[in-house]
Length: 250
Ligand code: PEP
Image (cartoon, rainbow, N blue to C red; front, side, top):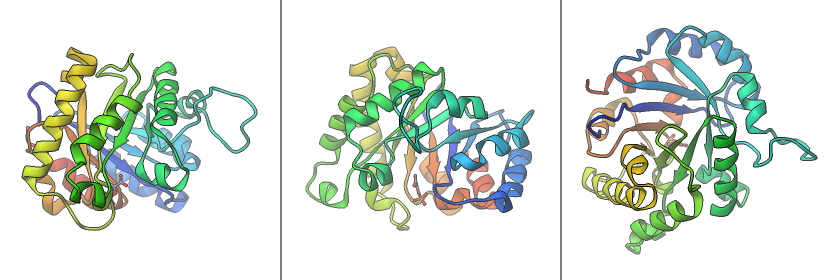
């Protein structure tokens, strides 16, 4: 955690969920509290409208997992940030490693999407993180620096932008970096954000993502400069997601 930064516990449902899973959203919405953290579930596009209606008047926010860089136009099958906002979401994940890998997304493309989210008065959750090979080669910090410089628009603020550090080798694998390694790279990311954005970078949330679970949440969320988590698998079960929320220390 960072003094004066309210943590964000964010779920990423990925390509999971139909109307049958909506009751999980309802249980999560009933269980979260806005007192010590903010809570968010990013759902597939198809669930945003219904999930947002279920969460009205609760502390749970609903977000999306991607968007197009343009606000409208001839882009068959794509969905824009203003459309997502109209459906009831306030946050959009951009540059998740699965999109960088599956769809060849580049830092420049992620930068354009993040700008589109910010232009729609929404919050972009910009994902960065190294491969296993890059970590083994001792290049994790260098990769983070280049992704930060390439993906974060200059007008980013602590309100319209969240950074999610997700080592690719830890996503969905059960592997997690040591607490020392998490502390070290989050401190590096903080320094890079400050040199890029000044005070806004000092106040920006840096989430950790990668096999965050109820069993390791308390220790990871207590690490300096870890201002919450981005959670894949464990966000699909309300009990697990709420247990991670409850691991935030007040
Ligand atoms: C993710 O996909 O953003 C993620 C962190 O997944 P998991 O928690 O399942 O590792």
